[in-house]
Length: 98
Image (cartoon, rainbow, N blue to C red; front, side, top):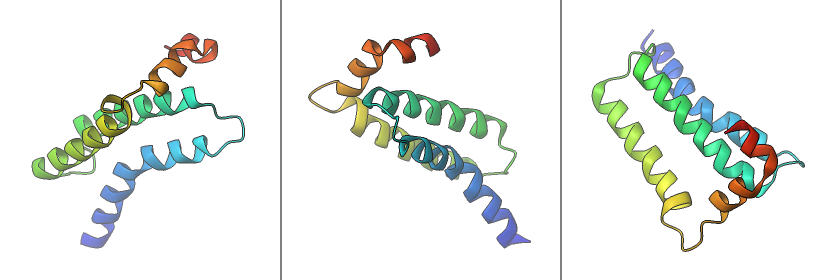
């Protein structure tokens, strides 16, 4: 039963990333979609971790938040150009979603 619980925890945490990757592999994906999907991942993670139906420990939740925030910062905040944010802002289809 411990293995099943660990598997449920793993799948619940990685699902937002897996869904975003699958969507980003579409032939119709634009550079603006990268920022939108990152926002979706972070939002879904926040929802999952606040609900904590998978019974994650406080330490695990902290580790997941730290890793997700670090990856977001590396891709979005710590780059010399704001290509993803700019493209998202200029893309009329993503502006309707925001």
